[in-house]
Length: 264
Image: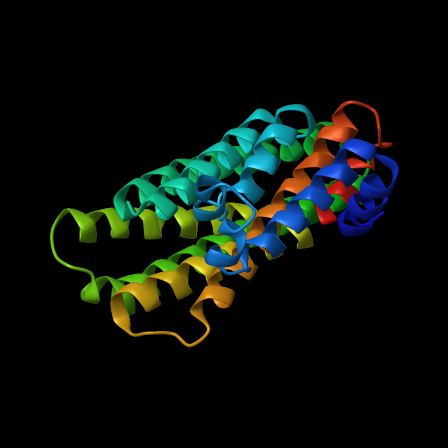
């Protein structure tokens, strides 16, 4: 069963998950309402920091529905949104850098764990199983090379086209480190050979590249929508796919065979 279909089925069958997605979606829609209109019926604090409430939803629900590294990543993403609304770009960048570090840890350990499971279940007792083992190992090597190449491409784009326009000093160094972290995050997401994780990571990256280009290089038309819609979508996709992993570990979903799970 494909991971995206599994996620949809899990949302339908799990009330906690479905409620989280509904609340998250409502809060995302609320973000795009003008602040002054919201202040007419909501406290100023709620309206001014409305950008952060969708990720707070995923953070709270994540404490019960996803693995701890993803839950921590959502927590620091919430903190990053909060710092952005507060007006601290440095604080925002630090929080999201920690979030990406958590995503990298989660994706890396997941890839390592699945590799061990696949290898241990592939008993080489014949030429056929030996060929299958070698094919699986080759796929892993190719996936790793592609992921590394994509990571280097995104880092090169940031260094060539964005970082030169960032003010020199601590800010440029911080942006450089952050560019490397989010690129590695995308690379480790690609290692999963999973459409949902990959799409979520790429949407997150696209959002950050638009944000950086708009802030440091040149104004981007409709930047608000181009930044926030991919960002929220990417976070939700990663969170949902991680919830599928968590449900499998807890027995809520029947596990696939290791080889099929790696290809999902």
